[in-house]
Image (tube, rainbow, N blue to C red):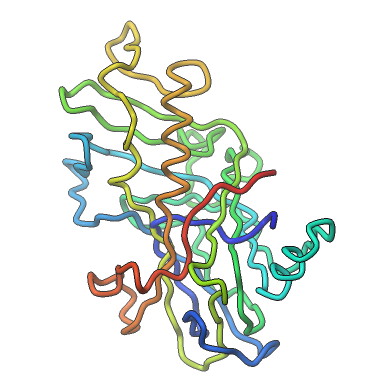
Length: 272
């Protein structure tokens, strides 16, 4: 189903509603959703960057998201039974949201979004270049993220710097890990979820050693330079996403909350 929840290993904060798989809801009761994002693993040193699998050192990892769509399980089941229905239902958070996966922040914050309590099956998300006329407060007019949907910077194991840029629209989703979807329940208390990206997975299968190096001694990975590597990285970003619940309500994605048995949603490509 198009325009469903997308996967990432980024913190998602949901306010005043509880969410857990297979837990049943009272459909339609009002509740509120808030979203935060974070990359994993954590423990970043801003001065040194983050070392990830493959000897890659990341110094920047930002994405621009918009049109985050939540779709009820009932709509997913109806469309699965009859694909010609192409149901466009659910709730959309338009954005844009500039997400920093090293600092675990988003500009603007995504919080206090009203939705009905229900069982949900997917979250769809767009990668979309940040247009100059839509730059949110907190992003400077000369910020390099403008015009891009993704910027990743760092260096490979021998110290050669690289920059990855995505300038095209793309879409992915977070699919419910259970065929019964996951429940969002009305609650007077704030309940947190985590929308996380596993940064260790982003360079899996990416041959940085074989990348073409620019005359200035750096590696550019975009539509024009090393485009095959860019395609692999973008797919890795999508598939690295996971949705978790904050089980103790402390606003932190603790080690005991990151487990396969606790995954609410899994990142996947979303065909147009």
